[in-house]
Amino acid sequence: MTSNTLRDADLSYVLHPYTNLVAHETKGPLIAVRGEGVRIFDEKGQDYIEGMAGLWCASLGFNEPRLVEAATRQMQTLPFAHMFNHKSHGPGIELAQALIERAPVPMARAFFANSGSEANDTAIKMIWYMNNALGRPEKKKLIARKRAYHGVTVATASLTSLPANHRDFDLPIDRILHTACPHYYREAQPGESEDAFARRLAAELEEMILAEGPETVAAFFAEPVMGAGGVIVPPETYFQHIQAVLQKYDVLLVADEVICGFGRTGRYWGSQTFDMKPDILTCAKALSSAYLPISAVLVNERVYEALKSNSGKIGTFGHGYTYSAHPVAAAVALETVRLYDERDILGNVATSGARMQARLQALTAHPLVGQARGVGLIGALELVEDKATKRAFDPARAVAPKVVERAQDHGVILRAMAGDAIAFSPPLIISEAEVDEMIDRFTRALDEVTADLG
Ligand code: PLP
Image (cartoon, rainbow, N blue to C red; front, top):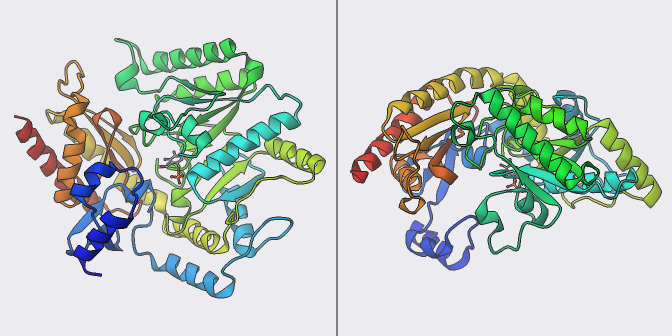
């Protein structure tokens, strides 16, 4: 199809996810045709640095031949096999072993699904099933944070705490609670230290648990760095104080490593960067560098033992997806994990991440940038109307979305998020020179929009 026919067909046939469907009819799509390294190219051949690695996911960039070969080999050998009812296959087994061996804390078993949402949905079901097995059917409530993002299924969209995911979807469902977001720049009181802020949030969590009744609270879900909520990096001692509360009331910790897993924050897991000791860990995205859909849920011995004994009693662990541990996706994920080791991806995050954070920090001199934040190769700039008072722009002016749109014209794809934050989460293979090019292109867009604002 020619690009005009493709565009027309897009408008006629596609219902786009996360899109203003009215605006789409006039704006039309950016149609990606190929990728190379950290860049994608449109039909006209214009290149874009993918400053978001797609959706925080294409960690090895857009043309890694080793992943293509891994997929091809598996397709030719055994394109499908499943793991229901005592069946198994090599790629699924080896991937489970690779993940358990690399887990940030001792984990007992790995379960596979196809997306971050499915992984978190699975974690929720495991927790409910486990607490029934342990004879505490009241202990079912789940706590997430305001601005959390854990997915879009009915249950995970309820854990998610962003207005667009609830409004008119009749969500959240019951038994799901939201506690404060650890956004120091916005939520700290005047003069409050980062540690005092972290302690206050832990105290608020404890109050919530006590008000609900600890015997009713099952688990706390947390991304190490909150991604879609605005790249919120918690204060250093935040998880230490939070975990003390969780332990006191026997509330499980689920680390949602869907964005942070596999090096994004500078350590292999976000849980290591922030000293989290999860009972359950979910991951996806960079697990396969996004080349095929696959996600995993790692559970510790205690959770596993409860699932096992209940399945023995009932006759089965009645949960699983047709494509759980799809062999082609599993083979690609296994190759991805091997490539991270082979290519010292953490070494690259250390150098290119330091470069990106330094360039973002330097932009705090810009009149529109209220705060730069981030760790490793994830970061954000929060735009404000008045830096001294941190006064935000009227959301109706859509300042961050305008900057992101202009950045796209200059050849860099970024993402505007709630509170006029602009996210940066490039492929983990990005070089320092490419970081510079990404920030230079972005800065041109920021300057132009600043001039437009007058
Ligand atoms: N959890 C986190 C932290 C995410 O960022 C996302 C997606 O962006 C999800 C879960 C949901 O993953 P998926 O879109 O693959 O369902």
